[in-house]
Length: 170
Image 1: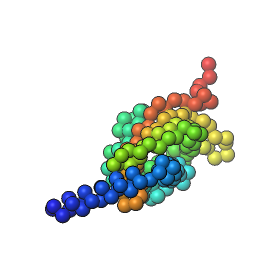
Image 2: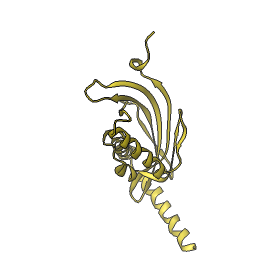
Image 3: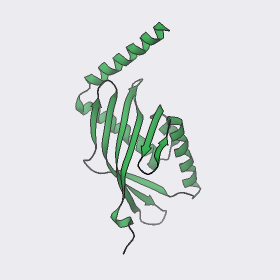
Image 4: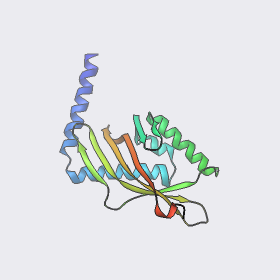
């Protein structure tokens, strides 16, 4: 048991040292690549298998409209898998996500990983029709490095506000 704890400690110290050695530009580049892969898997490709490789088993997802919407990585992946199936069956509208230019910042979280914070907007995509802006929001995604890969550990999605074009008229 002591050997196991020692190995865990060594792994943690190794991660902390390697993350601390990354320049701010390297850290930002890596985390933004992980962010891009995450949103591509969820929105563009609707690929739950790709998503499952990007989330930590202990992922927690908090949303201002729904509270804690996922208590684990597998739960989140299952929800996306179900949503993708509903989209293919025509039961849900496909959504496009777009980060707001220059709003995303990446912050080192010493000894743990990195925090990506920013704003984004969403659009509904109905085949054969122009996309419709629906809302914009803020996000804070906490990433940690495990086995040389960034994994999403915590998500805070908040300040969802209807987009001007999606608000009902007078």
